[in-house]
View 1 (cartoon, rainbow, N blue to C red):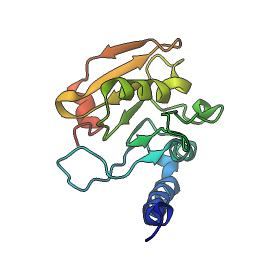
View 2 (tube, rainbow, N blue to C red):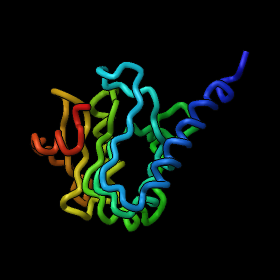
View 3 (cartoon, one colour):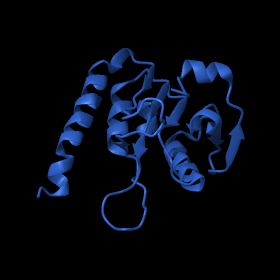
Length: 167
């Protein structure tokens, strides 16, 4: 019987390969939606990316304005849910980043909302930075001020089309 680390190795290699390919073309990339599913019309993702992968992606895409991808923020080790921390000054490499869509999330809304707050942390000084959470009729847009207080906003039809939010 293979241990879980060996069983996860093909997924890790695929995840690394995907990120590497995106980063190789990152200099001119403005919009990125990266989501892998077993069933296309079910918005639950079968592969999540960790915060370190997201940071590398942001650092290699200087013109990126929007990222939509499933992200696992849970720090490894321990039973308690703890979120990974960003590297310092990540916001400096993402000067153009305006929005992030946390895709494929089916956890309780309160946890997803706290994840959105965590993802937004380095970018809160920008009044135009927004986080999208959910899909279809549960799609929400939220913005956080520098103190971390949230404000729900209306999702515009143009945003749904531009960012493929219902994909």
